[in-house]
View 1 (cartoon, rainbow, N blue to C red):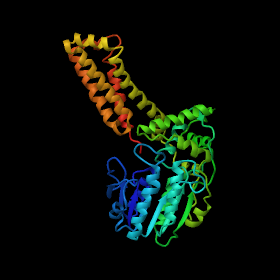
View 2 (cartoon, rainbow, N blue to C red):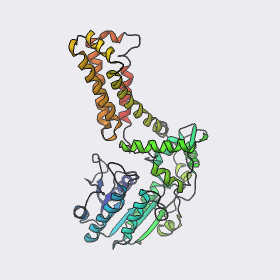
View 3 (spheres, rainbow, N blue to C red):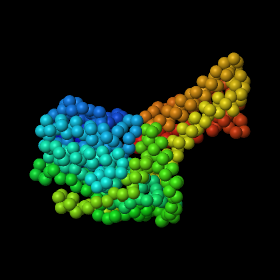
View 4 (cartoon, helix red, strand yellow):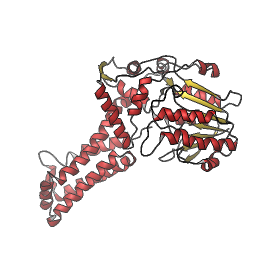
Length: 427
């Protein structure tokens, strides 16, 4: 079967792509940004669901037997729009699929989108569902709850990160969760690709049990082999600050699981009735405990859990470090820097050299903070660090013997830089 998979690099899309490839389907995989993955093998094409018009989609859907849409945006930002991706862009895709007579259209929405719409995310998801239901396509709408699996991203990664904390901060006003396994979601997609399965139905993909966020984290903590954590309930004002900080970080291009949209959605939780899903497909969703039990947590799992929150702290501190060195060099430390440059023989160029170094530090700090340029910022930091080592050794070798070790301290900074590069990938 020829399948067009939209959002093929996402948490769900990547697993669906691997399963389709394993079943021998001919997959055209679409991704939004970044470089095309090297695995699974197949045709990879770059496309933006929020910006392609109907004519653009016609070329992509021509000859396809099925379309699977996994694309989604949690919150509006400078790069993505919930309305464009979930509704307006989807409308153009639907029109192209109708004209191409695509046999099956599997669309991922969000659980609860048909019942409440407190945010642009859920309102646009509902609008997208309505457009699809009004079409002539054989559509399947899948509304997964919070999806978890051996791989992690977003909320599923946050569960493990929180599980690593011996003291768990508990957010106020969070609803129940019916955790669903990614493997069960993938099995559902494969089921509905068959031509003999029903169409034009919408299903909630929810796990078999309702759990609080605290209970979910506790299950992960037990699976990771750690004793129960203490609980500290955060006051509402502090929780709002955390969500607001998530919004700020999103403006820089990062994708933290906490945001103002997440706060409003969490009030309702992520629950639904899995019975129609099981009745339609014969798939009985596994509980979180059942899914974790067959394979004990590895040391890699514990590494990830401990590093998850430290990663955010690491990039924050490293960006601020470079920004602070640049600011200090141009203000309080300017005269000290000029003195060192004159000692090194810079003469009248001492001042401009200090300013140039400060501007380079600021550029590196800003590049690290801004997610689309973070990798380049980290490489820039390595280059600048090595330059400081070489220049300091040649011009002021005594700095190696200073009591505070200004050049000696560069080595741990360099190693920290390499560690951040190693854990930069988000999925």
